[in-house]
Length: 188
Image (cartoon, rainbow, N blue to C red; front, side):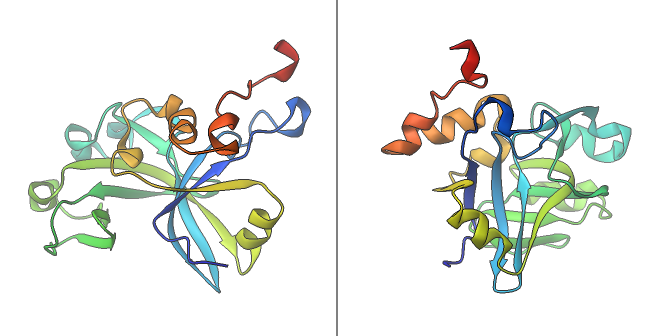
């Protein structure tokens, strides 16, 4: 399977009874942070929690992108926080680890005044999404995910509740058509 690092996984819509109401991956958009033969990990971009960042990381609240909430990055390690940032240019910076393009992780133990001058957007995630060796590849073969190119604004969208639809609508063919699939087909 191709390396999907830096790409988006967009959940294929499911029929009414197929998805558990608490399934974080239902209608999710996942930014793949790393993918190789050993597995993959990423962050769900469109599941804000009902909690402000200052509830756990008060020093970072003034710096987070709208809506200013903590996001659930996935079902793994929900007791950990990850800071995803947009970092223009090619420069390296103390407390920031560039992943690909302008996307980087920020060390949340660093003082915000040290790292924020280099950052144009910040989002805090509780937990992450993870797949073991071959697991994501199998889910792709089984048709659980569309794969799409990410745009810089996706990870920091001010309207995360519409990100799934936005990403699908800018695709071609069946992917764009999937954006119109109703959340509850029985209500159609």
